[in-house]
Length: 120
Image (cartoon, rainbow, N blue to C red; front, top):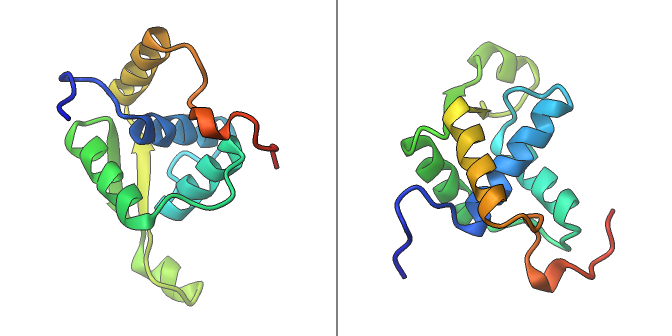
C-alpha cells in the first residue's frame, strides 16, 4: 500500500504523539524505549510495539526531518553501567506534521481494537 507524501501511518503518529507528550513532561530528548513505553501507556496496550518496527519508524521519521537524533555521551552511559542510548527530539516540522494529522483525523491516535482497553 502506498501512502500520500507527507502523511503519517498510525505508528508514526503514535511516536510523534509520545514525543510531544514526553516533552510536555520535561523529557526533551527521550530514548526509543521510553517512547515505546509512553506509547504503550497512552494507548492502554498490553505490550510494547515490536522494537524492530519501532526503530524503523523512528528512522523514517528522522529521514523525513520530523525527528532529530543523537547518541548520548558514552561517559554518561558508562557511569550508569549500560549501553549508550540514541536520543530523539521532535522537530518543528514534526509538530506541524502531527498537527496536520490531527486535523485530518481528530480521533486520538488509538486504534479501534485498543479503544475499550483499560488505561494504566
